[in-house]
Length: 410
Image (cartoon, rainbow, N blue to C red):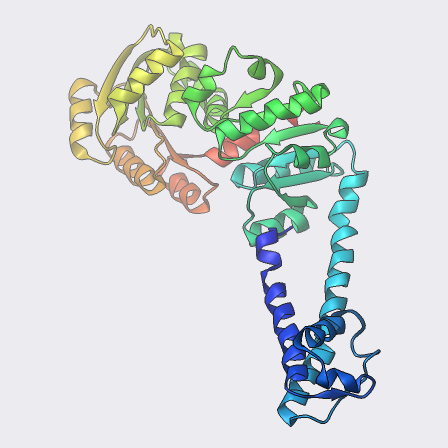
């Protein structure tokens, strides 16, 4: 689908140009074989006949004759152009009315509706295609990248629609009463909550079958005890990835080491905060101390303490600064000996290059450390370099795909 404003503008210019060709030809004194009296008529009559060219061409008025040669040429342009313009508009209207997407929407049932077309949508559709390849999918977004839209259609067989899920007209077109589930994976948390509320009003049977992604952790925590949270699965990708990392790698490492562990969290954004909450819930007894490094560490730790109310049985130290700044690591190693035991160091900022570079430096200096370097997408480069140097690469995309709940796919 395309937006109306980008579809019809050129047609008005074309229609106006063809009308002017017809009107100017007649006004310049060109006569017609079947209506010779038109040459002596008024301007309104000539305008009327010029408009008639769009409906019946020149079938009832004849062909141009006499008059200036240039005026006859201009009138011939209108004779051929106006009927072709009308036919093309009618054909486009018919195609628009009976387009495959519209027919699919009229007949679709037991389908999955996804709002958003970013990386998270692709991850979900990859898993859905593997688990339930016959599921009909409708992807809605306020705007599509052309290449991404083509990928959604051709690779995943999805129907794509441009629209806003907070608009009731679009929601009714999506046949929510026959839908299997709805995933709200867009970038606007408030819009997603608004859409979920409206969807539940229209199709209350979708309760517990609406999956809502919330980017802002503070906003997500504030929704915990609301009716909406009880009716939907509300999640955050970093939360999901942190859960996966703790259960897939960290718990096993903690059990393997003889003494309680030191954990260095270099980067304390959404991923780092989610990781600390997960460690607090599942591995607090295994941890001796947590060392937090972040350029905005003091404020972010206060936010976590306020929102998550973590009561830590381990020591926690906070270092404010860039993870790539040597001074920060000097301060940290003055307090803690990273050569002792097998500390866990997680380079988890959103800056992939800094994560990998710092991981390589730390591994060279403290070869006993268990080091994780984060990337967003799956990176063959980071995997190759990490494999050579004994660094574990963790991809947010891969962790999310590996730990999406099975109930979202069946």
